[in-house]
Length: 351
Image (cartoon, rainbow, N blue to C red; front, side, top):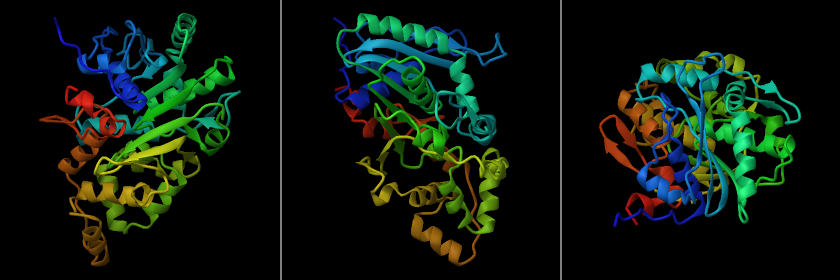
């Protein structure tokens, strides 16, 4: 008899597994191939509904917007897939980061404030199918909550979807859990977000994506860096810097209760020193420019020495964004922080 992988031990790790499952949806065909350990780890009660679609206006393009809707041991789960570049190299990153950063927020009543237009549009391409699948699954589920989750781009899609379900469809949401999520909207969206359920966001050591699109705090930290370092950052992260002037007026903000995964794999809240945005951003710059630590970086700045970025530093930042189990194969780097932080290490170790 074939031995099954274990169910993940915590709710957060089961949702992380569901997010990993969403990456089993082919962007080319839309077909779903359940990833072995993550499919079992998520605790699906039966095969989930698979939903995918191309970008709006590109009916023959790749099905880059996708999610799974299914019943699990915890209730009905909606897991939105993120979109990742094939390699964490400068070339493949440019269009991807441009899509995240270069998006002026837009209004969508009855949701509060303004939403990131790109994430809103991505959700629109699959929204009717998502809503239909949610209603169908809820009619089958006797116990448990409706839980919305997503990784990377799937994070803001999850946050916007939950607000729509609650405010527009009057469907009760049990909670939202995001991993490595960019910002879904501006500060008015965040402050006016439905209070009837909790939003929890997991962010990992060295992951740059949760800083995007830039917040007001991001600009404060950036302004304190030496000009030569800013120039170097903009060499390595052109798409981020390209729209910084416009983004200063957009006032994006993080949504939800922070669960930050430290370098050592511990999980802390926003009040912990390790989770301080200034410290975290400095650590990202440290990794990108190859310094041995924060002290070495400060000494270099004080001495007026220039910083030099590297592809290896960029790879470390990319590995931090990955939600899968830790992996160090060439061109397939994953730091594993999100699985560790959510309590999913037993899944990665086989039990």
